[in-house]
Every structure is written in C-alpha cells, then in structure tokens.
Length: 51
Image (cartoon, rainbow, N blue to C red; front, side, top):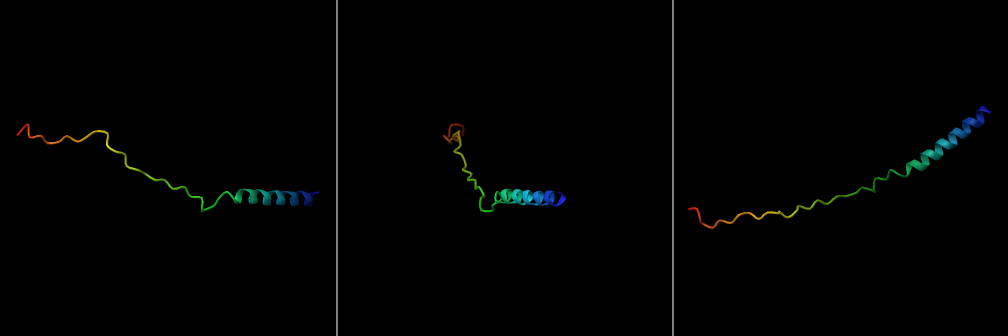
C-alpha cells in the first residue's frame, strides 16, 4: 500500500510540473509604446505691447 501511494504522488507531481512548466515562456514579453501627448495650452506669443 505504501509503494502505490508513493507512485501515485510521484505521477501527480510530474503532471503538475508538466502543466505549470509551459506557462513560463521567455518569448511572451509584452512591449509598451509611450507616446508624448500634445500640449493642451499654447505658449504666449510676444506682441511687443509691454516694451
């Protein structure tokens, strides 16, 4: 009885490792692109009023 429990535990452990091992791929890296937003306000233009 003891030997069959150990075999069952070993098989279930191998199945767990096989199922979880495929989720860690190095090729599945997400890349993010950051775009600078356009400024909301317009900078004041020099008109020569206060010289």
